[in-house]
Amino acid sequence: MTKSKETNKWILGATGYVGQLVTHRLFTERTKGNWSGQLITLGQKTIVPWIMERTNFHLFPLSAIPEYLFEKYPPTGIYHCARMAGNSDRARRIAARKGYKANQRFIQLIRDQQPTVPVVYCSGTLMYGNTVHAVDEEAPLRPIAYARAYEYAERPWVLAAEAGELDVRIARPGWILGPDSWFEHFFFKPALATGKVPVYGDGNQLMSLISVEDCAGQLVHLMDHGAPNQSVNLFGFEPIKQKDFAAMVAQCLDANTVYIKASDTEKKYGKTVFEALTSSTPVTTKHLDWRASYVPVYQDLRVLIEATVRRLQANH
Image (cartoon, rainbow, N blue to C red; front, side, top):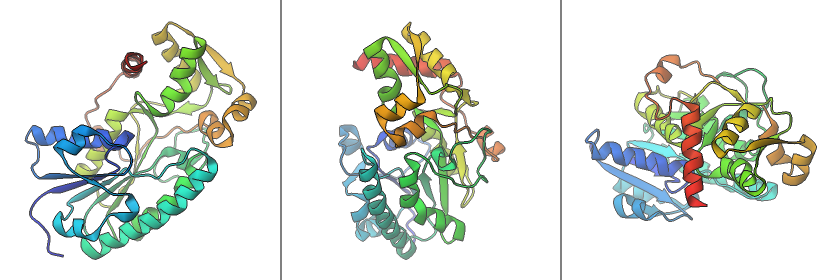
């Protein structure tokens, strides 16, 4: 395919938790005149009106992205935030199998149509497993919890990156903190219901946190300033013990913390959620210069927690 001179930035999963923020970041930068071209956004289930109205939006599942989109809007960069999800272990296994096939198909489209395009793939740090010390990008993958299923789905990208046949940049964010997802379901809502912020297990497990805004920002930074086939861990702060994180949340809510036994956590939520909540997953990076060149939205964890809590309170 002949390369287009026009800039076409694609976002797969543009209406999802992270994808929306990537879309917003790129849209804002274009408005400021930092780049020109088209935002090609793709989504499946969630409809976000402003994305439909103000970007070039296409309603396709990952498994059915058509070849003609490559011909009409040759991508100059692809952000892949379209992880297939499930609300049970069985559903996640099914989603992983579908995701594996969909990713294989999409990779083949790239090989055939635009083999030099950089792809930033959003993964996660649960892929590294339960660790005591912070791990960098050279650590072996030992997926736990949700990552057991997701690892299979993303395997085609990992293999493509290792082979060097495509420019695949795998980003592994830590705990992505925003007014949704895990924080709302496992910390904020229980605190609303009981008046106490839960600490799961002994609370000594380490968390590497990043705001959803900075997760999106670092994904864009990886596209713009990363090297071909560079994989990067994304985090905003030094690792923090869950009990200390919960205490900071409790302070914002003028509440106390309560310890939930590991056995009770597993009994209530099942093995997958139990592993995610009680495992220690601290990360660091070997790409220090790349990280230092990124300007974060949030530099103070307390400010981030306060802002997140206030946004959730406004919605409840």
